[in-house]
Image (spheres, helix red, strand yellow):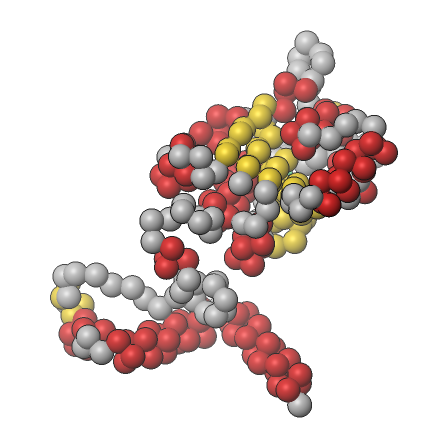
Length: 263
Ligand code: SAM
């Protein structure tokens, strides 16, 4: 899988050199390239922004600079007809390219989105700053037939798309085969297919600062694996009910939908 990040702060992405994602990039499981957007400017000041049309606070990132950068990174000609043909031809060969534009005004990024993006051949991140990227940029690439995802990592506003790209990259890359040491780690997690939060996890010592698992959760130490699985599931349900009523409502809606289909 190839990951490209276009940003005005390439150093921001250097943390990706650390931990399992860095190791995956080092061993070729993931091909990660970070690009400086200013490399596609043509003026002495390497300008990437301008004032908002219609007035208002802040600055907006220029579509012409982004267009040149994204054409290069997506490997598309500047001519729209030729670009459309190139996109169609690429799709015909089964190659999946996704342009991710992080924005607080996007669809919410979830584990389902991560699972979907983990199947792409190339994911390109366009990291906005200031008031964001001129809205014609995602529109243009969508018109060319490129798969464009405008994604929000949560209902709050960051200063730039880099932190969002880091979040998305980490969530996606760990799902790729070979990135995690133990592939079982991603199966039972919070937000996996079951739609529940994960049960609470514990390790040794069994008794710690007055919290004795032999007293509070004897089943966990029983060695009886069906019982452990059952009790863990109960804990996962209790946790989800207490912390995430929205997830419970979603599960309930799914159950009702399945009932309707069966009827
Ligand atoms: N004016 C924009 C709005 O209100 O929708 C906010 C722009 S924000 C200050 C600058 C950049 O940060 C955005 O272009 C986007 O790349 C990134 N960003 C901010 N919050 C984000 C979020 N919740 N999810 C993803 N990206 C975000």
